[in-house]
Amino acid sequence: MEKKDIDWGNIGFGYIKTDKRFVSNFKDGKWDEGALIDDDTVTISECACVLQYAQTCFEGLKAYETEDGRTVIFRPDLNASRMADTCKRLEMPVFPEDKWVEAVKKVVKANEAFVPPYGSGATLYLRPYMFGSNAVIGVKPAEEYQFRIFGTPVGPYFKGGAKPIYIRVSDFDRAAPHGTGHIKAGLNYAMSLHAIVDAHDKGFAENMYLDAATRTKVEETGGANFIFITKDGKLVTPKSNSILPSITRRSILYVAEHYLDMEVEEREVEFSEVKDFAECGLCGTAAVISPVGKINDHGTDIEFPTGMDEMGPTLKKLYDTLTGIQMGRIEAPEGWIVEI
Image (cartoon, rainbow, N blue to C red; front, side, top):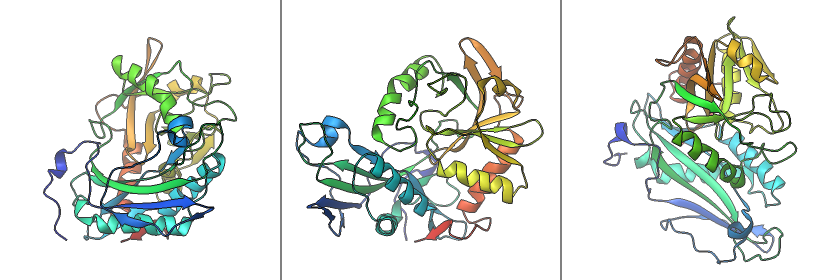
C-alpha cells in the first residue's frame, strides 16, 4: 500500500488526523455492533457524565511496519484486558475483549497508509477510549457510553529520542493508597498535569513520584514505569498497588529474563537505594525506554554512572531486543505479535 506523503522522520508526538476511526455505543444495557466512520468529531450532551464527573478511560498501543513489510500490533490482548479492569473499577461496561482486539485491527487496516515505514523511527499510535455519554447531574455512573478508537502517526515521545533525560523528585502525589493509580483512567492524568507543567517550567523532563503514604518508595512518573539496573547487572522495577501495570514493563521483564538471561526483581524500591543503581530508565508504550541521566532531589542531583550523553549499555540491550521483537527482526514469543 502506498504511504501518505508525510515527513515520517520529523513528526513529533502529536495528533495527525487519519481516515477512519471505530465507534460503538452502549445503550439499554448492551453494545451495538460498532462501525468505522469518517467523522473525527464527538457530539454529546453538555451534561454528559464524562464532562461532569470524568467518567472516562483510555489505552495506548502501537502498530508498526516490520523489516519484511508486514503491519503488526504488539500484544493488544493485554491492552484489552487492562481496559476491562479499568472499566470495572470505574463502573463502566466492559467492551468485549475479543471484539476490542478486532476493532483495533480494523482501525489499523483502514489507516494502513498512515503506518510509518520501517526504519523511520515513527509508529502508528492507537488510542482506544471510552466515556459516559448521557446527561448525568447527580453523582452516579452514566447509563450510556461511547467506545472509540483512533490512530495517529507519531515520532518519539521525548524530543531527544533515546538521549538521557533530567527528572526531579516531585512534591506532588500521583496516586493515593487504595485509590485509582493502578488503572488507566483519565482522572489520574488530569491530576498529573500541574506537576508536569511545573516540572517543565523548571527545566525537567518528568517527575519521579514517591508513594503517597510514606514518601520513601519509588512509584512511577506521570506516564511511565521505572526500571533500574544494579551494578551487578540485575533488573529491578518498583512494585506497588498504585502503579499502572505497564505492558511495556511486563514485556521488558520477560525479555530481560528469557532473552538476555538477566536476574529480575519486582519489589518495593526505597528512594534511598536510587543513588546506588548503575542505570535508570522510564518505560511505556509511547517512549518504549527513555534513559534517565540525572534525578534532582530538591536541589541535589543524583547522576547515574552512564551520564547524560547516551543510553546505558544494559538498557540499550533491552531496548534493542524489545524493539527488534516489535519490528520483526527478532523472533517474538508466541502471541506477542498480531499481524494485520
